[in-house]
Amino acid sequence: MNLSYCIGWTVFRFIYRFYFRWKVIDPHHVPFEGPAILASNHASFIDPPLIGSGLHRSMNYLARESLFRFPVIGWILHSWNAVPVDRDGGGAKGLRIILDRLLSGSAIILFPEGTRSPNGELQPARSGIGLIVIKSEAPVIPVRVFGTFTAYGRQHAFPRPYPIAVRYGHPIDFSILRNEAKTCTKPRLKQIYQEVSDQIMAEIGKLTLE
Image (cartoon, rainbow, N blue to C red; front, top):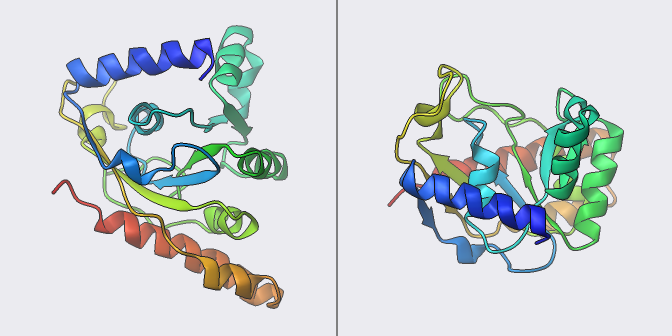
């Protein structure tokens, strides 16, 4: 962690502990070094730093490209390993940066649903994360956040002191689909992307607080 990231990490951990009374479950499932894709449900703006703060290694995050235009905010986002993406979270440039980060041994947080849940419930997965999984060799760890919609969902203007939690699951094995993707047709490849995304969401759904 660089100094800026370390300061942010410490501040967020303090806030999550004393304001939200957080709970972190099974962080050891995430490798301490090397590439990794952390795939999580998404219910609130506080989800990305929650997932990253529960781990003792730096993460890479996605951030809307327009935010990087502001000098101070842009500098902070860069120092926190943020990847600029377009409004829909896609784009060739963002994809290339994500794959480069994984190739360099970094870990990144992705949201299969693509955007925040409107009601706190799990939403269908988009195929984008499936493409990233297939084009990389990084382990995929399902992650689930709890309580963040109630604490600071779309319906709230300010975060409420509601208990939140994050649970890290066991890595998912995609070796069979990755091998098939090397030689399959383009129509089948698109199916594989969606299959991977759907399987990730299914694994996220299996994670509980118990």
